[in-house]
Image 1 (cartoon, one colour):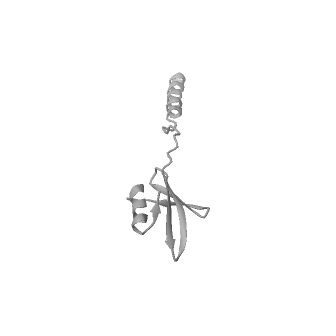
Image 2 (image 1 turned 30 degrees about the vertical axis):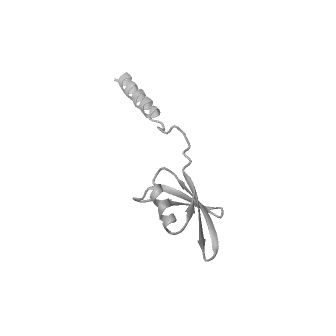
Image 3 (image 1 turned 45 degrees about the horizontal axis):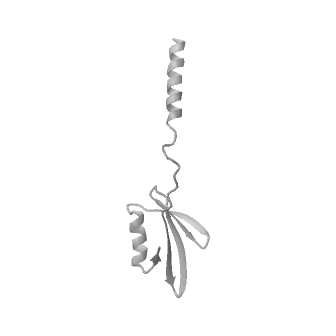
Length: 88
């Protein structure tokens, strides 16, 4: 009986170990740099899609992460362009 428990434990451990990350560690660089003039001052920000429903916003060296919700990254950038931002 003890051998059977060891076999099941070994199978469980091997199964757990083989379920490592499915990511292929490929970096996807989906970033846009947008500039928007606010009160005669140009503000430049970089928006990077994290691929997990969030976007990282970097403005003047300050980085923060925002939730996209039901919006895609392309829709997010298009909204800034509708406000008058220039993105590339």
